[in-house]
Image 1 (tube, chains in turn green, red):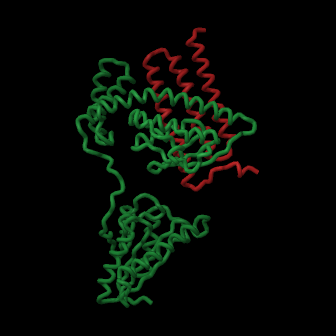
Image 2 (cartoon, rainbow over the protein chains, first blue to last red):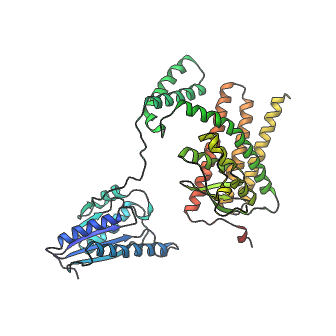
Image 3 (spheres, each protein chain N blue to C red):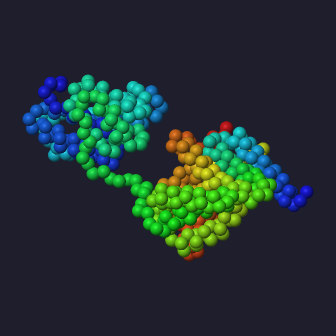
Length: 348
Length: 103
């Protein structure tokens, strides 16, 4: 039973990198407060799908699993001896309604806070229920509607995103300026006024976009080499695309629709964002293969026919992309089938 | 007709053919992934061939350059769009159709 003078703390949790430390911090606050009055620590998981949904059982199971872990963490943080006036309440909220916006989540949390006479809400800085984007700022603003104190747990936040802007250097400015000037002139009519407006536009673009344009320092020799090799790669890619289309046309127009689709895994031996993107796009453009998802080097590829899988694991495209980005030596790496990076599809 | 005109007609017809293949493929294929195959490949080539015909037909060098840019952007964006659709389908947990699903 709740006593009126108890200190009540509400911690909404969801799986995140900082949830463990947030719970630890909340336990610290609670233990400190428990020295002179009863404390209730409410840990809640807000479910985003309704209990009647087909995928709700999985989500609700994950939620109660997380809350079980939270209980174990609380025991761990209190050294196995929870102070007698510190009580832990865990609950899954919101399983009876659809929640979309931070406002919806705030409504659920505030109405719970109201019911339970919560004194303070401790927020996990990486809290993002339902796997949506970052939620902390909008949620904090929405929660301010209520009359509960809100606090962000002071935990180490791991930076997960790479920074978008990097220090711009002269080569970067020149490269962006040159590329945009060239593009402008190619699209314009080469009148004197275009030379002038092109210069202005290219300057503006370079100043604004040079900091985000390259992931590393552009080097003239490397870019020149890659351009030449790209020029060699393009006809090869065109040939592959032509073959791909004839095969697709054959399959599509064949009365029996002879397809045997399967999703296969390929651990590609290419590195770096540009190379991986190029390979992913090339795979999508060529015979019967479609890149579904890419995690680091692991490609999930939907293939239309057995023949297209065999071609994929022969690694012609992969080799060509390596050639474009790293030169001839790298092109000689073994094929995915020889490396055993074909997810056990060696029979083709 | 001059050879260039023949080339224009041939490219436009081929482009129309692959466009038609893409449309037929989208209707005949059994699920979203296989349809994305038809849409991403045949459609790209169909559009590219048609634009190539346009590039030849427009004799002014400027418009030809613009048409070539269109082709390049088509090659960059079409597979990306197909990938985005397939990935969205995968995120939604849609299972790919296999020959075993065929009754």
